Length: 388
Image (cartoon, rainbow, N blue to C red):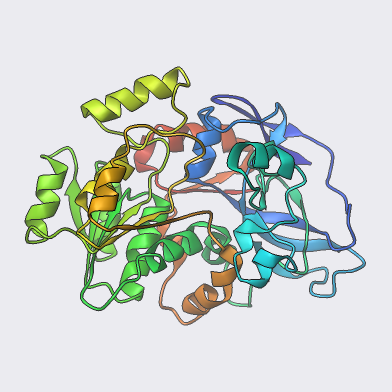
């Protein structure tokens, strides 16, 4: 089969690799009909995710058709159209039973590696390094899906692959980011980053009752898409960002702030340039420029929600401000399984069509150029979807 393989920073290639096979009786094999490049895939592309190996198959957003079913999977059958959550969960452990699916205790075969870095291991992830299990990803013609009786969600007739595809990650991620804000009627939510997760966080904040959403970015096309979702927008290059946020919130600050950017945050300030330099020489693993701004901008007693990916160690974070202002910080990999059915119902009911975020449709053969386009923000690229 064809699959997109990683060979180093900026080097991804579509190659012929062996087809996946059933390894566990709860496995299923899915023929991929739609797959997407996620913003967090760019962290791998840019060389910031450790424990990658040459030839690893990328991708964790995919939908497709079940073509083979393990002997102990009583949920699915051949021919089922499914969308698959990016985190792999067993369904039976302490965390799965408490609806914390991305913290599954049993799905990461390299748990000892993660424990050495983080203290404990989270769930295994598709196509996202050996730290998280070394699982082959879904930017391929076929993929093995462990615990096929737990993760995949059947796509009902009348819903297209491109409408359902983002239930695998970015729609639930934006929704959980908003849910973590504990939004109350009349609240104002500020969202840093108007990429795909930011776009879904904006719309999810409104779905959960926010009165205002302030969207922050510097790409015109992203800000325009945010405005189409009902947000007020700020280009952070126009003036001092914190002054602008205070001005538009009556000096109080947003009730909640969402960092939908994460470890590769842009900026031209002294702290941002400091981050660039330290990350370049690996003295700092992540660039927390947006996290600093969100902590500083949030109103006293507010919430900072962090769906943006961070992988290691960050410097110069104003934790004293978080403490002094009594902020709540909530973060973590998305518990996708928790949200898939309810968000699918929103799609079925016509409350939202997630395909609005797609700007580029490509064949899997063109995946390398798709990564470059997305990474370099060419052609007003916001979201790339590929068909094998």
